[in-house]
Image 1 (cartoon, rainbow, N blue to C red):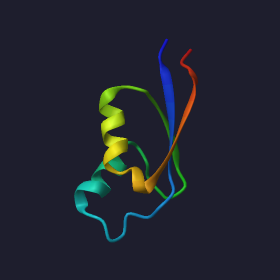
Image 2: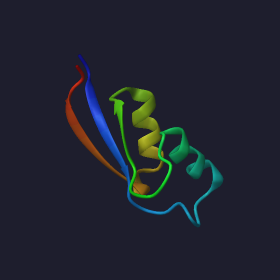
Image 3: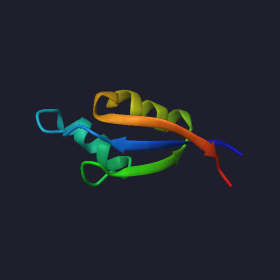
Image 4: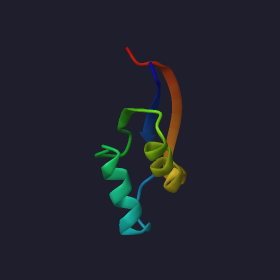
Amino acid sequence: MSRMLRITWVKSGIGYSKRQKATVRALGLKRLGDSVTHKDVPSIRGMVRAISHLLKVETVGEEG
């Protein structure tokens, strides 16, 4: 069992680099206000850290 992260897109990407916008899309977020759930793994943590100013992140319960 692994911990899960609920990631919510809360701030627009307008005015930020294409790379940051691409990271938002790579996380599976399509429009402002969307939320996705991912496993708490280093690759996801790195993506979140790169665009933390655009997101709200919550730890949710165990998977399964």
